[in-house]
Length: 410
Image 1: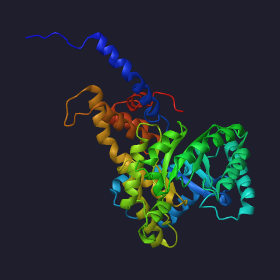
Image 2: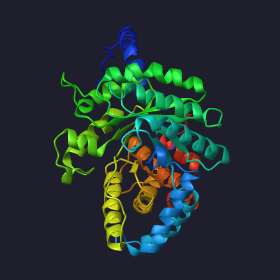
Image 3: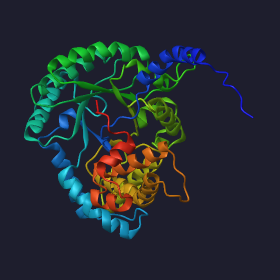
Image 4: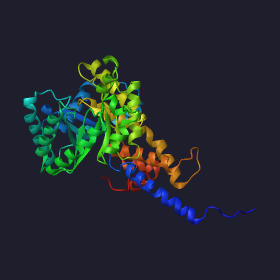
């Protein structure tokens, strides 16, 4: 028995009319994941410790540590380690640092009257590295917070650093704003960034999540989302600050770590806030460095590798590194993760594209996530095109399309 359609064209048109502004607002606020490559880490180097060819120096130091101490048992399959170690060595020799921040905040220990000179010198060194083609793919500076005691000093260092890089040919730089506590700080900082762009380089903004006020406002709302959207599309990431945040919520120093439940709570809020916006949620650091004798270095590597693997499993594809020797386990753990993921991801993508019935029925969103994981492995060097094509039967352009990377990056 058939029934006449009761929803007529007039009602459908009214539905479109009422929801059109909602559609437009949603697309503006949540344009989708960024198609740009995401670095696997951000390395922080104090402004007074910046040296010529810094990325290469870090890579050589990491290789020397690996040669001297050997890789400890990280709980990985020996055959997998045999596969990935040559790749890790090649990475440390060719692109050891994917993203770098010159640090004029907590990592910088110089006196106030020394900061101008240190920041200027760091900018000149990085400008020379850019011109020589040896600077990392990602580059920027972390200045001091916008709290009243450090506000002017922080902006001055940004001005000096960005001015020192003017004319170097760098296409884009990142400014990292630490210890953000209020949405108004983000809004007030935007005109400063506009002014700093007069040095000639477009700027991205990262916000560091280091205070409880950034996670939960006095009105009970999630401040992170409001901060992110207040940035008007300029913000590319929320970065978790392990130690400042842990201390601010009362965790004893011995238990401050990026895998503490308090850290998970903050990072999950970050993850939800950035979803669909194009910004990324980024894990923090461990200050337990792989230094000392072999046992101490191995202990530092085991801890770091475990934290990197844990973050990757939870969807945090980028974290902080504070010392060159941490690059060893950054890449070992990262490469192991993506190489482990390839067989299943490749098979499921092949089945999805060919619509072959199998044990798992994937939807477009899952196919997008599977393709993104494979592309991340390609981007960082964990995988190569030939083995991806063998596992999935898909070329790079097809993976880009499935992952939604076809649109241009900002």
